[in-house]
Image (cartoon, rainbow, N blue to C red):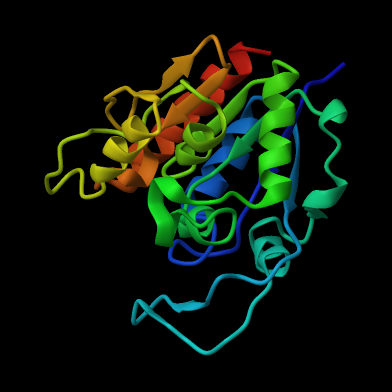
Length: 224
């Protein structure tokens, strides 16, 4: 029987939803491996809507599920309908939607709360010993919910290539282990079946981001 992977999105657009290139890369690499996948998102309002030209919040209101459907080409389900027993693995791409809509990391950092359905889903996959793939900022969800886990968000020393390196420090403050990795590398926490990649936490060319996400997908599928 073919393996099935659940993919959770958090909107559409790097500043207020799922990072579109990361999300697309996940789906392309799963498709290339001929692995079935289904896309989910919570039916909730976004924290806010950002004008991606100006980089500034607007007065608009948008729905996470409706916006995520843009990336999914309409083939998407409400997160509440995700049955963990029907899937072999979980992947959550990055983008600020993870830190704004799936959690409050954007405003509270390590003291954030995680959206209850997201928390329940991650903990259920983990308790079932099913692999979880997380890239860009989404590894912070594992750091918050899985005590002592190992993840990577890239490098822990800030520079032009690593503008978000402070995230690694917050992960360490949560009692988890951060592993420095390059954009084309992944870290596999074999104990917790977590596969993480930094993606756009690195200021790297798009093709390298795409390939790094592909390495995450490949490593995840090896755990099935």
